[in-house]
Image 1: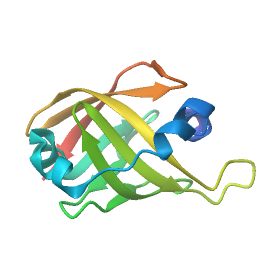
Image 2: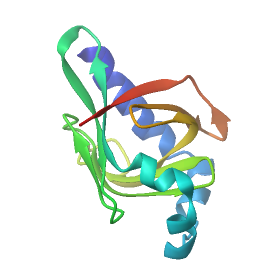
Image 3: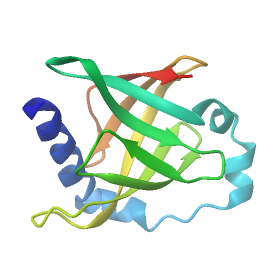
Length: 137
């Protein structure tokens, strides 16, 4: 649990780096996202196990209308999402005092199908380790 919280906090902190701030200024047209073939595959609830808690999972839910929600992550609340080519953007807010209250998590989509999503967080312009999610039906 502690590792999961620390990883989530690390993701929030690094998403607020100067390179991520540039990405937060990027605007997306609704037409571009509708034409992206990954958009339909990404809609749904994506989860991954919480380390040390075999029966618990956390992740996010992506709605077709562009809204997003955190699943079992109490420190981070996703609000909306978009996809551009092979990049997933998740807008979030947090109430943690030491962190920027709003930002965008940016992920490189390594693989996506009907049941699995593999992402690499983009941190300070660099692609980080992979995160594997399964789709809950």
